[in-house]
Length: 101
Image (cartoon, rainbow, N blue to C red):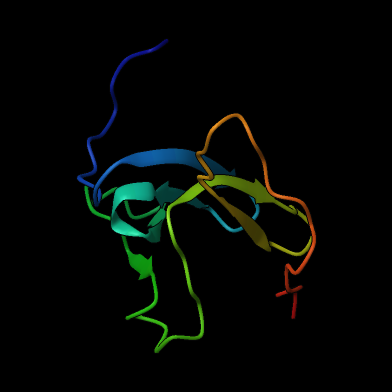
């Protein structure tokens, strides 16, 4: 119906959201905070429930300006693409590391 059901304060500049209906959570990229947060959709308590960034993962996850999210529903894996802004150019795959585990 378009009615506001709940308000969840998030870190700086939320950019994208994916909803994992099998695992009952949503993930939101927060570009300005260099983080992705998880919201448990069954809790409905007005807060996010996990924050993934370099500090909370002891450096295992390095995020810089996370922007776009892509969910693989079968595995629950989420791929994160950074905001890459620059003079009408784009990045190529050259030198990118595969982080799938």
